[in-house]
Image (cartoon, rainbow, N blue to C red; front, side, top):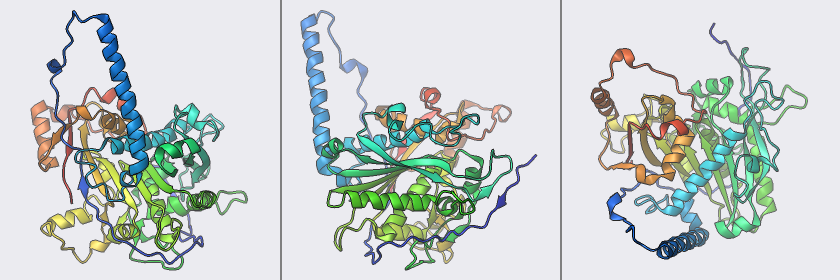
Length: 470
């Protein structure tokens, strides 16, 4: 039987009063990719069998010392270059070739997002069902990040404004992620006090429905200037702004929880060098981008008339969030976005598979011309780091966060492609080369939150990274 759901009335325009008078600044965004790596033949590094044990031990010790020195150097460089790594110059000259510090930071924030999946309780029989399995003090230790140098300060919950009868229980707040802040020791290594907020991707049925609500609606997050031209996907906005207003002891909206905690931390560490880093996977990256825009639009990151606390979003397999007005406003506010995407990941092409600004630019000759209805089309925000991987035996790997990170951790396995890519022609060629018959090709719906990295990295049909800028 098909699932039935009803939309409940909600006030998407919940306002929280914060400082205004934001001075916009322009930003340049495009697409960048991983660099070409020179492969080293295995035979070029040989060890003569007659080498003395003492010499081998000395060589091993030397390499270990070199590795330690390199690690110390990287830590020192990060403290000095963190603004560039966070995108102050839109990652210019850091991607081609890929800067090791940037690679390290992408993976580090990806691991923070992975912690959301590891800690999320999906056991219907558990008392913590749809919540975090662990307390804030123990969470990082339980998920293997006890040495990350951060402390969890708050858990974040979201209430989908959708009621699905087959879902266990009524629509209520689900654990979406957490807020954490770097410790005093980590501040020395990072060069600043880092406030990190991470979001998991889609798991529950109401969240899937929210993903499919592809209509654009004005964000109207600033009560002093609604900016009706800034539009975002209604499902993501609903998840961000809906609360449990009908419940006496209900949660505030995801937005209220986040803005309150961010304001508290900014006030607590006022006067220190600060950064705000947002990271998410799939639907979580949409919430991260909405939060980044919200903080900047309200001016919470403004320290004075000339100085702003940098806001950076690391998006893993994220969908489009808003229209061209939303993109332009994010650029004006200086919200930096690095999107890590797989060209074969369908989630990154949604919503607006057909009606998106990128397609209309192609139809317009690839120039700056925009159709009159372009403001009603979806478009991506930020710099794009493009991976290319696919597995015929396990299609769900194309959206799996674990696969994304495992490939970034092993850049030597990536084959570089400099020229542009025609996805349709390449797909046809791939099927012909593999001689896959239509009868044996069964389409499967990917389950993004399941970890597939353990069984996919050894069976990649093709692994590439394309280099392009739009």
